[in-house]
Amino acid sequence: MTGKSISRREVLRGFGTALALPALEGFLPLGLAARIERPPTRLVYVYVPNGVHLEDWWPQQEGALDSLPQTLEPLEPFKEEVSVLGGLASAKARSNGDGPGDHARASATWLTGVQPLKAAGEIGLGVSADQVAAKSIGGATRFRSLQLGCEKGGNSGQCDSGYSCAYSSNISWQSAKTPASKEVNPRVVFDRLFRGGSGPEARRASVERLRKRKSLLDFVKEDEEGLRLKLGLADRQKIDEYFTGIRELERRMVAFEEEAIAGIPDSARPTGSPKGRASHIRLMADLAVLAFQADVTRVVTFMFANEGSNRPHRQLGISEGHHTLSHHGGDLAKREKIRKIDHFYVSQLAYLLGRLQGSAVGEGNLLDHTMLVYGSNIGDGNAHNHDDLPTLLCGRGSGKLSPGKYVRFPNNPPLMNLHLSLLGKMGVSLSALGDSTGRLNI
Image 1 (tube, one colour):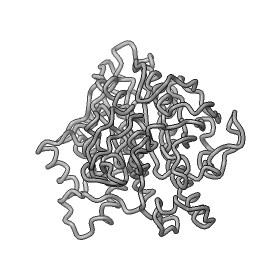
Image 2 (cartoon, rainbow, N blue to C red):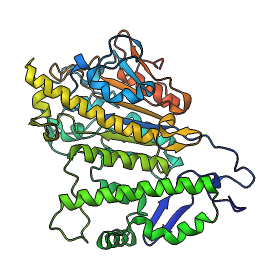
Image 3 (cartoon, rainbow, N blue to C red):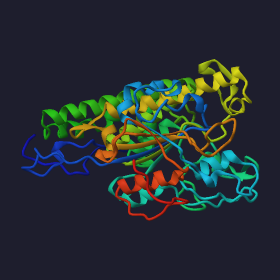
């Protein structure tokens, strides 16, 4: 690098654009370029609905993950980066006198551990684990947290036996009455993260880029050229990789938007989402990875679908709805279709892990510095139980986790014990969360 240091908060600016940069050696003060800053730890929660087919979920024996069951086979390349956690329970997702509504309670309590209010669609819950983390460490980044999803859902009205629709549509909660609503449109997420705000100039710039089919990077070219003069070879290579990822993501978004909004003028920003389920999930996953690369947030929640989702999976040759199939009643054909859906979702998780692992940071990669929980707050979809929850813990958490094993916890400890444990590893000092009873040895 040259003799000029770069501000830690420097971004590339252009018309209506403020593009955050990944961590570079050039951010270090003069004379300290050789010092490698320890990358921050990221926290990610990925939710899947309707439980799983548990017979194909659990490994054959505890200990090292020597072999994986059918549903988890897509994780074979990441066996040393994943732990399977068994025996966890969610007591507040049970009825506890409130009657039916297991799906609403499942998503509502997954990160809160608080019994949701059931009163003609009214809302009453608690702060979720991700938002506890966001309030504690979010001040270090431009966005305290990022909430992603692939299925729209309202925050008003009644769903699932009288519970508020907000419960089924959200896993992230800022307060007892306020969900941190997710965004399902990749373009909106991209613009929010990289276009430089939501003011009139930023909106005009976004429309201009769409109209002329220009990349966001074309708007910051002058700043980029000036930045390169300050960087050494390693930093220039990192910038090239980062920009390549942005251009590829833009290309894919345009392709899906053209399919989704055929006939709508190019100048109108699309509001639709990609039609392909896997493509939609992977676009959102790539946005999360880019956000981590630029360190614009360190906390992400991602709902692959809303709890109780009954969307079909036609990409798998399945025309029946997921929720309908989850109530298979032992029917062999329906059980096989549920296996395919479970396998599909784990395949999308494998994609996300691969993207994190392929993103270099410090002396390792993003997966080395991430703690990612994947799971559902329903165990077996047919039984609607809320114990022995299917839960994966992925990543090394900056050395705080030792993955690559199958652990079964005795006596059905609360799922919130896991979240409390991870918050502690994120540096969040908290004695209890929801219905937690202590921390887990993970």
